[in-house]
Length: 220
Image (cartoon, rainbow, N blue to C red; front, top):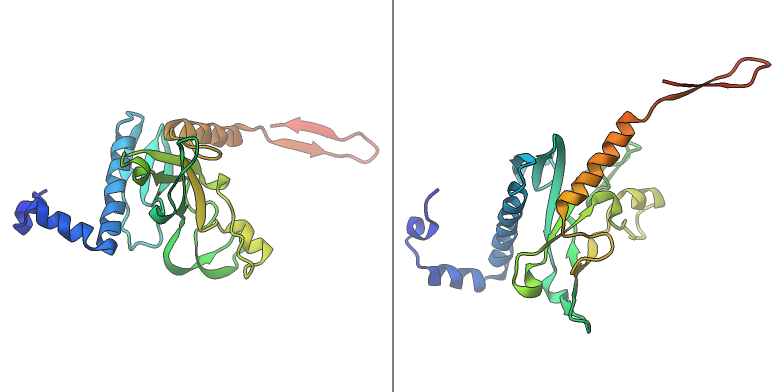
């Protein structure tokens, strides 16, 4: 991969002026840099045996990174803080929100096969939400939460059923992490693997009833 400064024949000062002088460019570059930092964090664990970034324009694959951890595949969605909502609390901790939605409106299919056009992400569309907290202290901290623990949409124009299956577009975030968030993604993935295995290993219970007799329970 070429050195971008040499490839474009620019100086670090010129690149810095371009980035800091254009908010939209800065936000876009920052998001991709955050993904690189997240990839580095994930790749540092030897139990991560595959790490793939799908094409941003491939709508059949939602999520920023796909990883295989301990033989199990997970999709990780990478988001950042809304910097203008960053606050330092009285106890010295930090609070903000992260915008958790799609970049544009698209048609999504709910579990009952009904469809809706929305920017909201779906419950179950990915496995782990990653939020970088760099702008709190200008340090590369990340917090993580499971998809099913994220708040649901409260938008009144959606039906109760739709709100149940659509994620809220903003999520409160603190540093250090509290509530549904953790800074240890691997412990979170371990708990998800344990939950998956418990579901696949659960014995099947069959109840057989005959007229005039108590039902017989068979564990297969």
